[in-house]
Image (cartoon, rainbow, N blue to C red):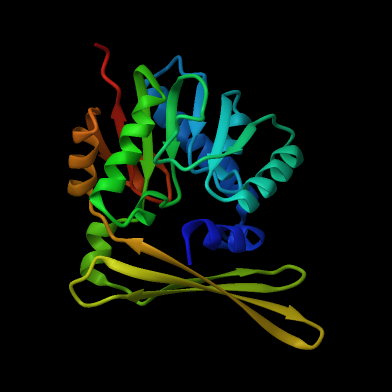
Length: 254
């Protein structure tokens, strides 16, 4: 299944990844705002180039940023538009692959790609293409913000599952996540999301599966530097009050 198909199918259930998605929008927006202001205090224009259903884009728009959101998944963008309207914010959304951001007009103070989007790119060349495309949309001195799973830890632990997320509903729903590693030494794995939904007749199960490459900090740092970015810095989730490690980098002024 392609990444586009994975997210098109997952879009109606994506909020279940979080215990409380609406609270996550507010919390992550605040965390990203603090991180952005620490490096680029005058930032206004933000491109979220893997915006999904709008988690970070909406959170930042609520804080006054001018946000544009792009994603490879049409269904995710359809839901993002509905959620942005529900939150009362104005965001321009468009379909775009973050390996080629040429269709996006203009330059931005900040480009972000959160929620573990980069590891869908299964080769170094694709990661490099994505970083170069993101840099091409950054103003001189602009900031790149990336969040990914802690793969340095995951490659050691190779956990087979994660704690289930329970949504009390109604209807009650449970999201179960399984990690199916290709082999004991392979960085490749498949994530299976099993969504259990209660109805009057019992429980139904919906299955979503997507491919990932577990890519560590050193590998992403090298790719960012190869793409021409500078001041590559890693922040622990605890340090920046975010649920994943965050990488920041700067498009140096020349």
